[in-house]
Length: 119
Image (spheres, rainbow, N blue to C red):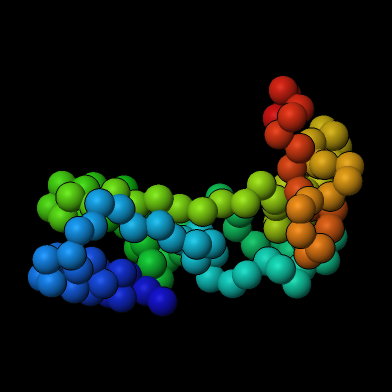
């Protein structure tokens, strides 16, 4: 949802005495929309390596605060695929895309091949 929701959820666990060492976030940490429906060419506006400003308006400060003040580590899920058209073109030029695609049916032609040592 947003930064407030994240902080209220951590607060709820702390006040309730529930054990909490970390919070794992899905793709919402870097994107405000899913890339599941993107074309093989990607989208020019998509930011693969940014921060979702609704959730992280000041990422460095927030992560430090969560760790130091609330003793909570933040982990983030990131699948090995691209959604940005410009980055996809670069990956194609360099041969960094997986020739067989990825493990799921969506995101065809957008999966990175991490067995390539140059990647």
